[in-house]
Image (cartoon, rainbow, N blue to C red; front, side, top):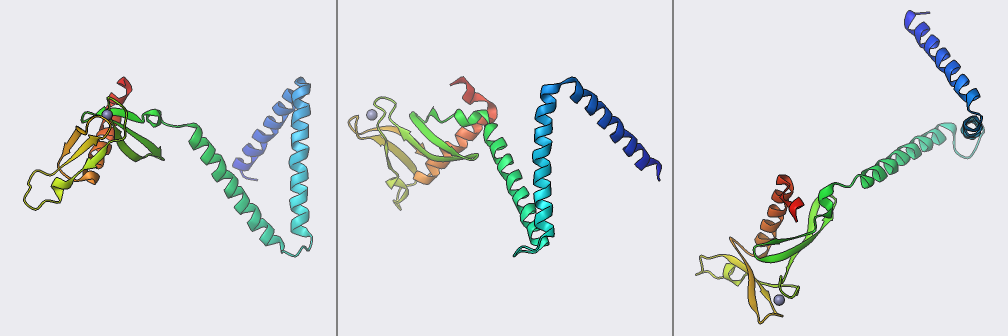
Length: 185
Ligand SMILES: [Zn+2]
């Protein structure tokens, strides 16, 4: 017997002895642990029976199913763990930018459905990026207009069409999250 295996046997013997003492000292806990262990043992026995007995599936197939089930359980556990630890910025879903109130939602860590609303009446703004389609215009911009407040241009983002404007807002949201500015709102 090598020295390493001797040490590991010695350690596990000591651990078992300590566990035994603790269990003796706490009878209620012992009851729970015993019922848990017997539950685990009945599961082990069931698996063993399934592997040994000649079912329609051979033993190795049961083993594969067991491994896949275990992987599935681990994935479910990790998914729940991930959900319970939502990052703080997920609660950041609206802010004032370019003169309008912008709202969005989170899909994972991605900003989704970003759109703007009128800061005066909260109406959904409509966009006008017709300047981007004009061959003669060199002032590419997207205006956001409130139909509820006498068709005023509420916000204007220069540089491109509607997709460019929402992209610019998404970049600004990411910037405010990185710098921690969003926490002031
Ligand atoms: Zn309005």
